[in-house]
Length: 114
Length: 113
Image 1 (cartoon, each protein chain N blue to C red):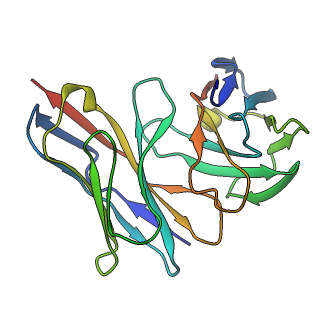
Image 2 (tube, rainbow over the protein chains, first blue to last red):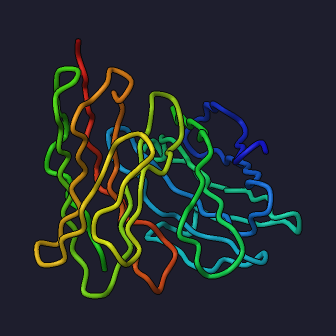
Image 3 (cartoon, rainbow over the protein chains, first blue to last red):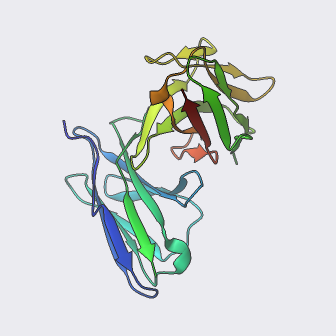
């Protein structure tokens, strides 16, 4: 079992550009959540996808959007990048059912905006 | 809305000494509570969780946490730490009706010989 995988590992972009981050959930998991972890901070919830729909969203602007594919993998898109978007972006997956008591996290994508 | 407070940003301790990492939460509804550990350049790993039942929960590597509803706390303890316990520890809370985790700002545990 490969666990949660994310790509790329690192990414450098400039202000105003757009970025796409990818996540493959743990085998058997159907729900994907995205978190932003700024340096020295705890992760902040961006949104969660289930059955290809956004189920819940945190306090992030519309520049942050996502998608979930039929194979449960997910993408996080950020448009019009700002310097403040520099962070570690974590993907977490969880299993079937509404229990969802444990989220398994991937290693993250480190995004640097210059 | 929920919030989590981890008052200690860094806790230095000597190997084999006991440690307590503090976590307080705020919520107007029932919650689930979690401790995650993050080693350098890695993602988060679940250390232990409180969902219901016994207020004392334990992990496989010797950590334990006790849910105290009256004090809205979920402090993490270990009676004897190892060098390998050096990491960032995050307390998190989740509303029983929703999915998102709300994290504290983390406590860096530094274990020295």
